[in-house]
Figure 1 (cartoon, rainbow, N blue to C red):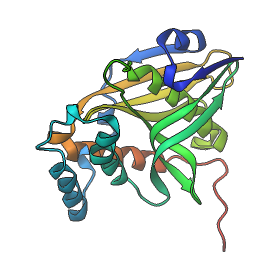
Figure 2 (figure 1 turned 45 degrees about the horizontal axis):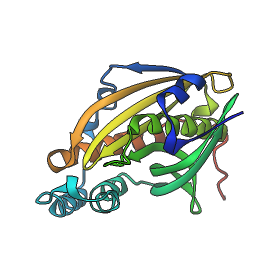
Figure 3 (figure 1 turned 30 degrees about the vertical axis):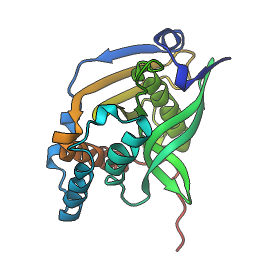
Figure 4 (figure 1 turned 120 degrees about the vertical axis):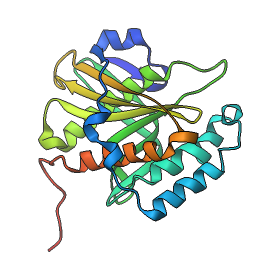
Length: 232
């Protein structure tokens, strides 16, 4: 079985393992994020985040500083119920003839007693400089891993295909991705991906939070084939 690490995943690796289809389609319009309401407190929290970056040359910060000041605070605003924002999450998933493993920079997903159960949104923070590489292929691997995890947990009634969301950030610029993974038990599954335009946090923080909340809201409407037990 081919073992692939998310941090070093390449386009040639993906072509070996999956049927990749990149579609030019404005999928985020289907979620209607512009209609997602924000409370007065959430708007105040967004402004607090912006106070820490709006006058800064964010592209000169290192990745850890950008994550702490700009990225993770907005992710937390999309939390609701048992959905939590996570950082540095180890994931692993097995397909027919390949195995994916690695660490995801950020996740929004269902949590149970301090453990991640169902990843709704997986995120890559791009490494810049000499050691930098294209974050898209790493994100595609994370989307495949998340789809397999969710399918196994019964998300969407254990349906094939599985829909999962992703995002990659470069400094304080966000790009969202919607993925559809088909043939989860096949030797060569199909990965269809659609990407949004770029969103700059300094001027579009509200829109970013609305998209994050819209994704969570959409995912929470999907049924589970074996929902968690409830005490009576």
